[in-house]
Length: 535
Ligand code: GLN
Image (tube, rainbow, N blue to C red; front, side, top):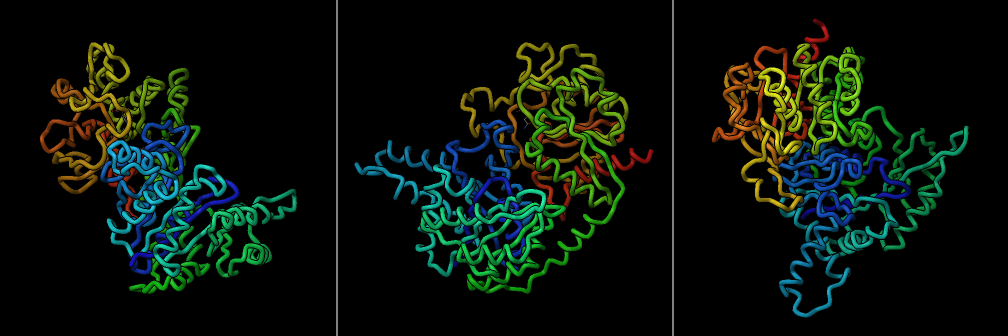
């Protein structure tokens, strides 16, 4: 019998509801329970794949090729389980499905309504995660905040779930924020009280309230919330902002939240909570370490959430190598106007992450040139691998005007070209080469040395690829195609032979990095950065 934990938000968004849900997952997993997590997103897009990173931040890609909310990245990093497409439900998907069935005539002349048809479809999708994962506990996070019009069907669905699965099998957590007023920093509970009232208004009585705050929370605040919101005091959890997000599971555990939930849900835990390794990791994160400065060159650098998995992967690899990573966010368009030698001066390594469209491309090419010429470690992720190839073609092979056909249809040297399987596709949503594909690694290469194995599986999200017509010229000039699809048709990794570490992957390794298991390519890159910093 699967137990459900539903997580809603109140007062304001972006207070770390996703991280809280993820951290709770870790707390339960530490008891030997099998955990899965799902996000319900109330917006009407089918998935965030077609949204601008400015709207939505990063698009996280699952093994099975779903383009999902960035919270799934937090979930995977915290619970260390691969999630699936069903773990991210949007209102768009729900309506898409229902309207398709309506057109097919499945509803036999009935009127289709939000209740029960939309709510039933949401419930079906929640149940699906339980069935597919076989988890003991499924944590379901509802995006947005209570009171949003678009979240109403989702709230109604989870309200009904409590009855469907039995009261004793569902637990509701409401995450709110305590603003503070004036110089005294007095924390205000009124918005929390109102938001709990809104939640009750739609028929949901929270079993626990998590209070987020930027300041320490006094015991009286906890008492007050317990009284006015009618929640047991032990289930009102103060959660001031912590120095690092991976600390959150420890905060929850130390507040006794894991035990409280297990007791309320009647969960039989296979073992006592064991967070020993996690605590060791936090000690290592907190230990003062020498700094390592790495540049991330992208066009959405003002919004760090757009590169959240890249940032986390760099952080994981740096901690594992005893370094405190400091990121220099470099706007690729600035590199087009300014002097790379000034803008990139002093960094120990450069990462060029994924991206789409022409804007800022020339700046990224300059970053690649800077890294190649000055022997600065470079890690190119998807688009970052493509610009590394374009730079090499232009400046080493002297192929003037070399480009990707994504940026110039009529380039005389289409180093990067549309994959043949992509040529006849006109729909933008969900049609890229997505999800996990195998990749064979060449013996003697840096990629192979980093991974320490011959074949790997990595997650993709792209339409363009390296043009095989240029493989020989590249190889002759010192580029090694160290990762290839098993049929030898698609270049998955290329790396420069005579360079400290200049490597690009057509896939996104950042999605598979974990705080306790840094990704091999990020590890290899960071090792090279440390070597460079001490040269
Ligand atoms: N725009 C490039 C492509 O579609 C790169 C995509 C990416 O970086 N994710 O191939």
